[in-house]
Image 1 (tube, rainbow, N blue to C red):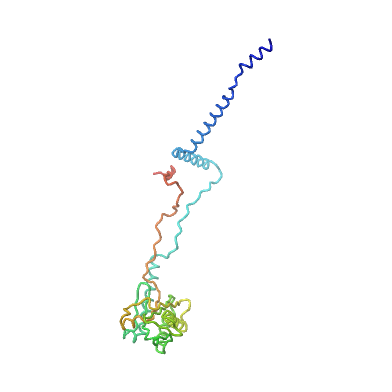
Image 2 (image 1 turned 90 degrees about the vertical axis):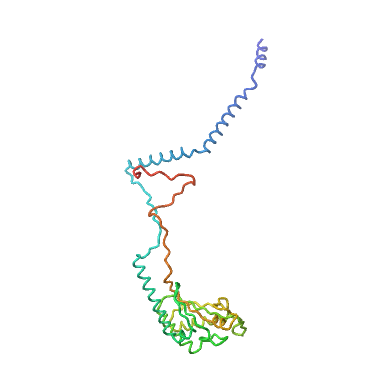
Length: 279
């Protein structure tokens, strides 16, 4: 009888109990993914409310604590120091007056050449331009200064030696080609002519650090190279005394003092002011 009862119990044993554990596992897995999804889709409004609450809580704790609170001071905007407007205006006027006097002195020492039109002295926004016809300074196809040219340029060098303005000496030619042992092209001729004037200025007391020699060949004509008169005008040496007295100073960007840029999402609204700052 006992043996028959055991066989009966084995026949009624539940072989599907594993479904219960499997269902529990699926339920937990589903709950896990629901929680993960809810965390991934953050409610911005609730997050801002929570952030304001945390900031207020820490602020109140800071007021109640005896520990000194560290407050980050706003970063001031960096601006170059500039002289007062009145002082800058006075300096500009004094500089313009020096440039004007220098131009008059140059006209005076080159008066005979200015009178017959072979030298032009002009003042502009960038300084003084002295344009000298090459026939005054050099023999055709040569870069050695003549005796009269040395006397005239030495007088100009003595006028500009006491100033601090940079000086650029430019050599220019016409389009007629040159091909000699010393000057294979107009580039070499124009550059050596400019260097000859620079060397004379150095001998006249001008600091070498202020001087620049440049040869442009026939690339910057001021007249038509198709005529003899135009080519004669293009053969020249130009002395640029760079004062820049008329150049306006760049105004600094207008920015409220102590205002710094904050890093916020593109669609986030700016934080509301603290209660004591509201009006």
